[in-house]
Amino acid sequence: MAIEVGADAPNFTLKTQDNEDWTLSAQKGKTVVLMWYPLDWSPTCTTEHCKISTESILTGDNMVKVGISRDSVWSHKAYKEAKSISHDLLADPMLDVTKTFGLEHPAVPFISHRATVIVNADGKVAHVQIQESTGDERDWSEIQEALTKLGTANSQAN
Image (tube, rainbow, N blue to C red; front, top):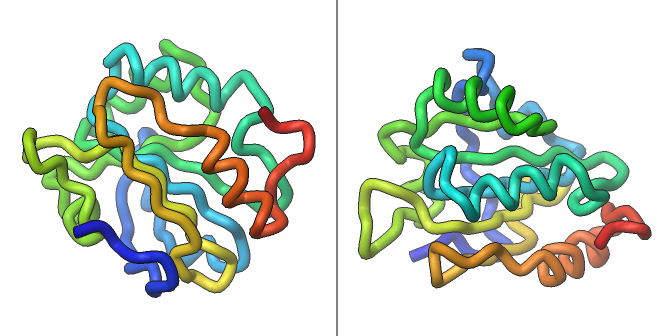
C-alpha cells in the first residue's frame, strides 16, 4: 500500500548519477517532488524526463525534483547525459526506498510504479499519485494543482 498523504516522509539516502549521496532530510524547508519511474531508456520515462528538463513544468520557488528508479548509478549517468536531463536521478537498485514508500509494482515486482510523491517543506507527504498504467505518462495537471496548493508552483508552468 502506498504511503498516505499527511504521513511523515521516511528519510532515505540514495546515490545520484554522480555517485553522491542524496538525502531527503537534507531538503527540509523545500518542496520535494519524488518521481518514481520504471526504467532508464524506456520511451515514456524519456518523454517525461525530457519534458521536465525543457519545459517550465515542475519549476518553482524552493522546489527540488528527482527521479528514482532501480537503475544503476552508471545507467543514470549515461541516460542523464544522453538525454540532457536537468535534475538528479537516484539509484534504488534493490527497491528498498521504493518498498518503504509502498510503490513496488505489484504485477512486475522488480520495478516501481510510475508514481509521484510530493513532500512539503515540513517533511510531510502532501500528495501521492500512482499511474496505474505503467506505459502512460503521469498526470501533470494533478501534480501542478498539488504544487499550487503548496504555493511552490511556477505560475507559467504547464
